[in-house]
Structures are given as structure tokens and as C-alpha cells.
Length: 151
Length: 407
Image (tube, rainbow over all chains, first blue to last red):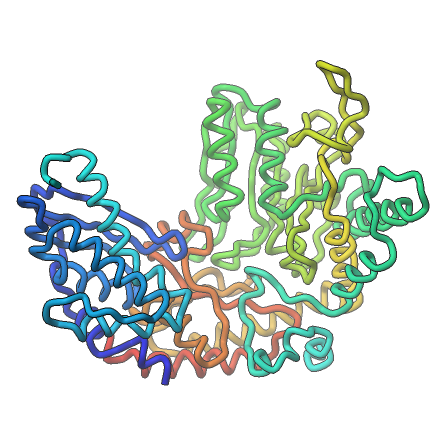
């Protein structure tokens, strides 16, 4: 059933036991975004070190898709350089919008692929993208305010 | 009960192969249209299409006649004294914005107050926030109680000689509450304030008589009452409309234009700048014909029955929260099921061909007060039947089972 393509076990795991849930003290990046479609909101906090993401955490509320997506994302981006994050975010966006699965590299490939069913549910793409949009916007603002950290 | 089998056969959308099994429970967002409405619009384009009020030829006269006939049809439907008190807009939102601009900018001053209610849709809240900001006025909120009702008695502490206007819904799109408007309007008038009624959810479902209510303004949308998208109505008492400047400027809204100065056309045409949605007005008039042929009282009784049945059936489901009053309510029913997010619920039900709304319903103040980010909402109209309610209840039970490991 198509529904099982959307609600995969991997998402269940992340939804029930979200990783990196909370708020980082002394965060370098702190951004709250809302999904105007449903009122869901996410607060993302990041610690940056030498152009890399040292730590990431999220809080807020939302549906299975948005919460699981945020949980997987915070795990995936840890230790990555900003350019790498942007590349992965692009892959994720293409996957949930067009169903094209490009392995992001590294381990835990299946966790990323678990979101590939979303392209069959266009109204839910925004849910999956909320955390990633917050991330990209937060990084952009940070780059603008701290150009030296991003060379 | 209405003969829903007969009624559904008037709606081409339900006959499409992909919609055969559809349970459409989102009429509070937009209704479907019967073929009587669609063919009235098609006939206008095929036989009478020209730019109204402009051409000196018979075709243009027919277009003008069709447009103005629609205006008087609308006036009759809501009990307006004169058809010139009907202004065609794109939707209820635009109608409210006209008043929040054209009326408020002339009649609301620094230190004045505008009263709104916590039940309002964003379209009857945000325009007033902006008007209050522009004019240096204060926004006061009439609160709703635990069951989603407004108490006219609470107006006494809020009303004063600075209150210029009460903006109030007649039926809440989020909680379903039907507001006993007359009490509120009389109190506002006694304090010297005008009243704008948001009728987007009430006009499609019940008889609304602006003169009996003594409403100063009434805004509603055509598309929620079987009419086409893109046509709405602002009713205003003639004296108020005359004491307002136009909102948009351009063609047909002027009486004369000189190099540096222009004079305005008469009400209502001074508010209808540019070529209007004539086919939309014609379609709205056909929708009113359709509604009145069934009878507004019969429609209200039908949806009331379905809503009461839904309250009963959904109420039997363990873990469900139903929002809003149980009685004196319209057919929009908000709920949450256990901790399943409304979006997940809506996606699940969609797989069962059941279309419900999920989200904040453009009423975030209501959501804040209920302390929920979102709700699911089912709404009923004249083409829904008891089986639709049963399908919804059954779908919710299946959803609960499907998501049980997620809770």
C-alpha cells in the first residue's frame, strides 16, 4: 500500500525517539521556521566550528514527516562542511519532490531513502522540507553575519 | 433530509471516474458546483459576453443586464433594501479589506478602538490589525468560552465611546459556532459602533437577512455556496458606502476625469474598478437559484442532521477530541484523534477517498487558545449524506489502528 511507502519503519523510529531533540545552549545558529500550511514549527540550533557543523538540535512540534525529517537531518549533518550540507539538502529536496534517490554518501543510506515515498504525496513535501529549509536559511544568515567562518 | 442522490447527480465532479468514491468533507474551504452554475456561466460567455457598462450596442447591454440582474439577485437573497448596496468583489477577504481600508481610513482615528473576536478567520483579523496600525487605533478582543461560544454580556466591559466597529463572524470556520448576532449588533449600535459581519460560513448555510440583523456590512464568498471561484460580495448600508472613498482606482469607477482630478461614480460602481468578473456574478446568481430551489431552511436542517450524527459517531471513538459547541453550530466540525497529527490523519483518510481539511484553518488565534497547533476538520453540505459520516467514522477507526504503534 502506498501509505506504507510514506510511513516507513525508519520514520517511526525517528518519530518515537527523535535524535538531537532540544535546544543547544550558546548556539551559533538559531532559527525558528513555521509551515504556514499547517502551523507546524521548528526551532533549530547549531554549533559551528571551523566552517563545520559541530552540533545540531531541534525542537518544536509537527507531524510524523516533519519530526522524523528533522531528527534524521540533525544526525546527518553533524561534522559536515556548509557546502556539503547544501549539496545534501539539494539531494534530499530532489528526492522528496521528484522521487529521485541519490545516495548522500556516508553510512545510513536507508534513512535518507526512507523519505523517497513522499513524492507520491505532494501536499506532504513541505512537511519533509521544513527542517531543511530552516537549516539552509539559518546557515545563510550565519554566513552573512560571520563571513570569516565560512571560507 | 434532502434527496442527496438527486442532488449529487447535478454535480459533474462527483461523476468523474476518479471521484466516484470520493467523500468530500471540505466544503467549508470551497464547495463543489452544480452543472446549473457551470452552464449559466458558459451561456453567458457563449451568448452575452461583452464589457458591461461600456458598449453602446445590444450585446453590451445584455452583458450589463446580466451583471446587474446578478446584483439584484444577491440583494434579494440577503434581504438588502437596494441592489446598489451590493458590491461585487473577488471573495469575502477582499470585501473585508475594502471596509478596513475605505471605511476605516476615513472613520477610525488615533485612540479609537476596533473590536474583533477570538473566533475570527485571519481574513477578518489581519485587515483590522493593519487598519489599527495605520490609524493608531487599538484592537480589542471578545473572547470565546470553553465550548467556543461568544457571550454578548462580555461586550459591556469592552465597549466604550471610542469603539468604532465590531468585526464579527456569524459562523466560525474553525469551531462551527453560530453566533447569535442580533444581541452583539444591538449592543454595538447602542454604543455607537458599526458592525461588519463575516458571513463566509453562514450565508451558504442559512437564511441571512441584513435588514433584520441591522448589519452595517456583510462579507461573503461565492465559492463556498456553490458559486464559482473569484466572486464575492460586500453588502454595506448605502449611507456607509457613500461615506467611503473608493478602494481601487481605474476604469468605470469614475464619473469624470481631468488632468489632475477625478470624481467618483455612484455606489456601488465606484468600488468596482476595472472590468469585473461578470460570468462569476452570473454563476453566483445561478448558485442562489439552486440554493433557494432546495430552500435554505431545508439545507440547514440537512447539514444540522449530518453534523449531529457526526458528533455522535465521532464522539464514540476513544481518544477523540471534538472542538466547538454541540448545539447551535454550523456543519464545520474540528477534531483531533489521540496524538495523531491532523496532517497524518488527512493523508491516511485521503487513501480511503475521504477529503478532510487539516491545519490551523486560517484561525491561529483559535488554535492558540485551544493550545493545539492544528486540528482536523470535516464539513458537510447539501450533497453529503449519512453514509459520508459513517465512512468518516470508519476511516478514523482504521487510522487509529494504523497509527497505534506511532502513538
